[in-house]
Image (cartoon, rainbow, N blue to C red; front, top):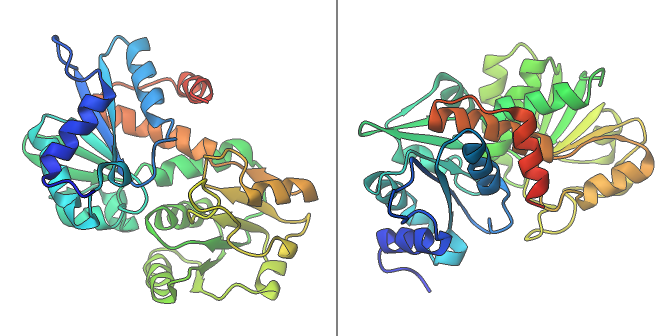
Length: 303
């Protein structure tokens, strides 16, 4: 049932969390806005790293599905969080682009990407950042050294897709084909990235020939999540010569990664991006640099 007031819905989320109303009050109050996010490990990463560093950190899940909120109430929820003293918000599917309308300013990277996953609420100003781009790039650099980056097919042109496309091109991909069920959205992202990078960037339909010619395939759609089971394309198009990347991290092994590993493909799980984006977001929220390896341990312990 839809909440009558977004402020009341936010209060319910805080009460459900159970820690943010303690007498001494939290030093850092942050949250995650999205749909179907109950399995997220991000709260555990932030809270345990805060504890390790001597910070009282409360991280609230603001799940529009669970709270019965409509998409149109996103701006009101951001305003309610600001009024309640939140230091910031993470933003996930399906709001990374929609949230831009509720913000006052964007970091240069977020403006270039056209999507936001981290909002800082400070001194009456709402500033959008994108830590997904850095998070994906760090994950790829760390786990896939030597991977050929000549031609990549990316599935998804939403908020996460925009960040990953920017990261791939910044890492040196020379030919990026973007596939999305919304062809106009794919074309718009391709045009924006093509104007920024000296590379071939195009919107395409997925077919066997396109996939056969590429070095790597990255899924940035929600397909593969528990809520959206399946694969973004027929896995019979996979070949052992491909490398395959995911941004979905629950479940840790999606159907796409399972099929790719079965063929002997090099694979990049979504866990790396999830951890690395949280590292950068934690620093933006608190002003304190966390330990990436500790954040990784928190992530695994949350399982």
